[in-house]
Length: 189
Image (cartoon, rainbow, N blue to C red; front, top):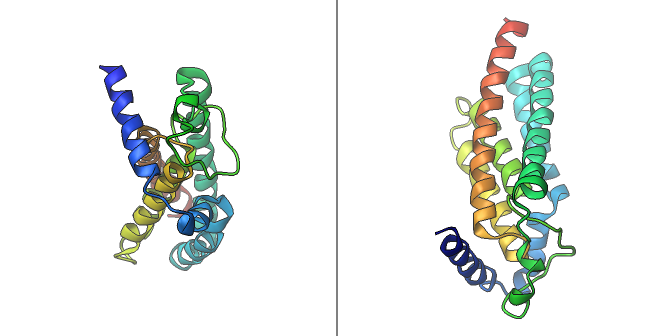
């Protein structure tokens, strides 16, 4: 059954990856680049500051730093210790069937830290600001989905890597939101 699931995952990867074209390659590289989200992070920081002021914002920044560390370390545990599933760009049998346009190809890919981190931020900040900015959660979840899909487009992750990363990112985002709520009540109230 696991073999069949991995086969479907590979087929879906090839379908989604081959939807790309050269005219869109630079766009998806930009979406996947971690520094391209800095303007969004600055806007979110401003919105958080407006809502929570200095002390609340500092607590939130500490929570975000811990949250991103947690998603990265969990992804690394899955990739390098538990599963060691090669990325599609490392599978020789796929080389002539796929488009690989990323600059580099890491060794293992299950699960995507990009997908987990972006989803964790989307859930965390979306929950923080849901009362004040009604559509922000939808915008952030769409942003996380774009980043996640970009990893398939570039040829460095299978869809299952992405789905698992988004799942863990959602859970971690919610856990850190709950943690932030408790800490803020104790320190600010």
